[in-house]
Length: 312
Image 1 (cartoon, rainbow, N blue to C red):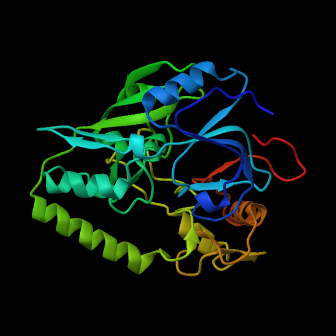
Image 2 (cartoon, one colour; image 1 turned 60 degrees about the vertical axis):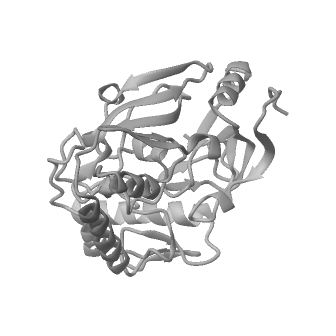
């Protein structure tokens, strides 16, 4: 049993995480911590045994939690971290603010963060993964982030220090993103709102938005630079190489590579985390064997496989 500091937020031991992820799979966290605010988070981390691992978790939209659960403390930010403020040229959003909500509020004020509207997740996850679509990325507009470090210290980092690249960033080990500041282009509010309406219609037409997925399963395998900025050109799409490998609609247990969009790994009913991850690995092997292309996971896979101890 972990020796846990007292908090003003909520601590829950052996908390099942399956219902906190979009894929609805996975085992429990040793401890789930939902801090009341930044001070609560800082004090908890400062007092927590430094050997105890921590894992910040958003709304689980781009995540597979393995069936054996997550060792240590899972930190899930809530209402104390979802504020959005806008001034003349900056948009400041708490890490728990939903991407879609930030995009709408910014558009109403004439700031163009429209690419965030169709990204299902929170600002913390968007920064962590350098989220992007339609040729725009977080790296294009992010100026700085506020972090609470593993020792409880609060600090600010410039965007350049995060080394943002395609679907990745570099953060101090155990750091929790609590706030992000953006400097987006300006635009006409009506035009921006209409753009987001059109983007949503396009997404719903081409992606299985009503199914249990975690977004794109694999990164596009080629055609991007190391910066992950909007001048990148994605010539080769993951779904195309999956199709060419004959894996559209492939199944394993309750997992399936979605027929509507083959780069969407889907819990079609009763899937385990192992079903999903193992099917993804089968796809990777088939694509490599047939085309010599090594697909890289975009979905984060965390925690322990049942009977196999702690995973990487």
